[in-house]
Image 1 (cartoon, rainbow, N blue to C red):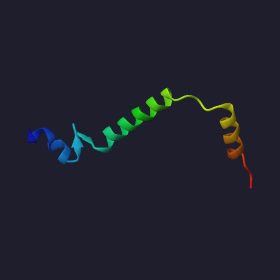
Image 2: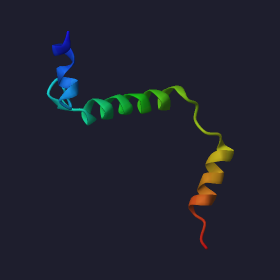
Image 3: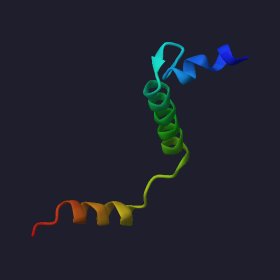
Image 4: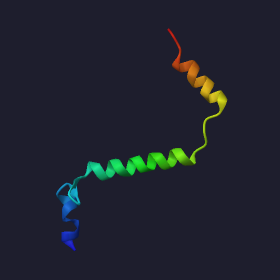
Length: 56
């Protein structure tokens, strides 16, 4: 049983650095959340544009 978790202790998982599976999982989560949430309202888009184009 210990050999199954040995790659995790060595800092790799299946020969990949531990950051690679984490990056892939977070990318998938970001895409899924983006696809299942509704688009912002026109009012929110106008407010964003106003803030983005603000000149001091």
